[in-house]
Length: 440
Image (tube, rainbow, N blue to C red; front, side):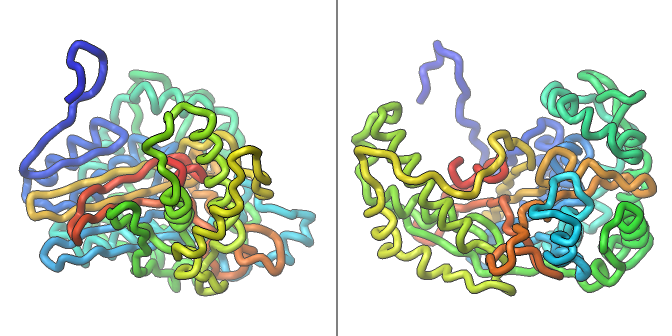
């Protein structure tokens, strides 16, 4: 128990369910979903849809989602990779012919087919109890009637003002008179509300085969994208077998590549060989150890993590204790090792994480993301959808496992996680922060 005479947070307890999100409003709506008979999946999807309205810089239906879901009645952990693929017309040669050796974060080529709506639909059908209209209803109401802008969202929004001014749709949908909205102002998204209502009435096919798909394709092609209706209509998200590592008696689960969750497990496997409890957490030795182990884990990620449909990713080998021994042998506690060759942005705080547990024993660990703030910063004026820039995670490097290819999924940063003890869910957890999520 904490010292109640000092500032801090007390533990929250509940017997009928719990929810945690980055916004009070979405947390309250998740809890209301539970109170009205919904389960953890219903509440997670409802909260995610709300976040797409009230935190449009961090998430949106033009992005992707990953989810881990513990089904109490089946005593089984499900994992869904809700990431989108590159258009069939996008190749490394096309990019190199344009003089590009990387996909820029604001380029239309960074727009992979959004996976979120298909993922939501699949998860709801398989594990939820509500209708698609039910889970979208609170988000539709907020988009139509408006919401009051929160302090943190306003601060993040303001930092992206210059980015949003570059795009006609973004200026119209996301700025007020050419400026970012301010704390306490009322925000409405009428075009997005119409899109959400269409999805509520027609389901996911409206997004991938109907008027929404056509609008997004027309918009992308006007911007120079290679996207086609077939890229949308032939797309589907899929379940995958979760991967795990045992750390001091706890089984830690992640979604396998194309996600970077493997990185966190490799890092823990390395650290397991040290008596970290006996080390001062603020000591030079502790910092040195964690930095060295992190660099080794990220070097593994950068060398191997990619879409397994296109590349051989030796997951079992990379998660083995013997491989951790090999990596640990590279650490010299007296001097720094080599820094990773692949550099990441030093400032990544976008994405939303949420988790929900219900009275039935179900538990959901869930991330929805546009990658960078507002994704590419490009918004389709007709639908109000901001398009993600997940394709910027590809390399333009023929021969590399993560090289951009048609219908390939890029290395993905979002990593919802879950811990089990003795075969039972013990902790549902995750963080925001792009490439740095494994360290968190």
